[in-house]
Length: 523
Image (tube, helix red, strand yellow):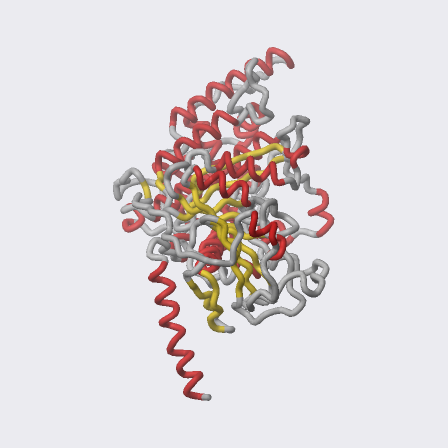
């Protein structure tokens, strides 16, 4: 027995090396986050973090549903006790598997522009929010202030805002992402969150005046029908700059990032305070490079509205999530990307549509959350007797594979990106290795990385909570821009000159936006 245990221990490193060799394109390192810490990735299927409650990860499929009647489906990993149902065969699903090569990808991902070693934090930030965008905010804010005073009376304390003041204004609000303080005014308060060096750059009264009149788009145009018209031009500009500054790797993830609440606030507030907080009136999805964490595309949708495409009309329906996925992948066609999706997006119809556009997918399925139209029913019911860990059953239709895999629960995957005959392994520190199809290993690896991104980067979202929905969207977008700027910084020569953590990078960016001479980060 001792010899067998030693053999298993010797095999584990070899299996890990084999798994790494299969993912040469996936170079994941905690260093990209800017601080060391325990590996919080683990297996995303069992994650208890808030990220796992989003559509990007899920628990085992329908474990709490009623057990399937005897005979409705054979135990996984064992031969079928009867021939496949005729309707499944006529629909093209077969238990006969065939190998298929992965989608070819010859593009080189990474930054499109080489930044000099002397580049500062604000240089990376202004790849996404350049001066011309800030000047537009200056113009729109001054226009709004003028019209506001024409209607409601003159404001003698108001002086038109300048470009330098607009940068300082952004810097003050961004500072809440580092201090985790919801009130920007705490900087001038003299309390725990006060910061005298920042407070001297602008008076509190001046900051409040700019905050009162701040606008990205001052007035609705005759063509504007979208509820986010006051921030849409900025989102479009930001989107274009993301795509221009970075080429993602082949593997990407569609999900909702963890932006619901500030983690420090949630950990310290009472249940009553949580109930009193207003819920966001919009949802935000992203397409994110799973090798670096860089957010390539963002999509914002209002939760209120009476149109047929409103979130209220499509809530919890496949149409909404299909619409979200199509919007996020609009610029991905023809590039042989592999997109990982959560249960709310995964569907046969969407994956077949994407395959025609040379976009390939791998998604987790749930009979409660997914659109299961066109999938074989025998693969969607749980057997009465749970099989052994690692057992699986696969049916194939064209290039599409439906996988049912057991590991302390039933997990189902739909993919046209990975061969159903290629095997992988999930290595757990305590329970050892669990065999699985290659698609399952790939899904676990990439979703695990995104969970780590959420765990670490979500703490740097701007804590300032304005009441207006368009302003909430704006500050969330700014938060994403700062995180993306830090990722580019970590991939540049500037990082080798001064190795700033994410918190130090944020502090440095704030001081540079405020025009302070002392550029050294606070410790």
